[in-house]
Image (cartoon, rainbow, N blue to C red):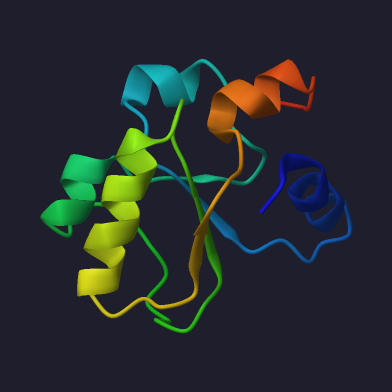
Length: 102
């Protein structure tokens, strides 16, 4: 999903769940409004919060992409099939000047 489209959906109240798999420090420095903090390692051990509905649409992001791709694979192993990566990830979100929540 592209960042501007996600922002429009957030503003309209129709946003999918956004999983931010960055570290706690990165997340606290600013994240997509309403994002769920779910570090990739915690996802692996099912210690992170994530939707229980395996058909729910999930948008996954990290800073540049590798951790999000890993998280997407982990979620697929848990049976989640409606996942996608945020294009440009957080670096792209910030570059576009989109709002951050702290």
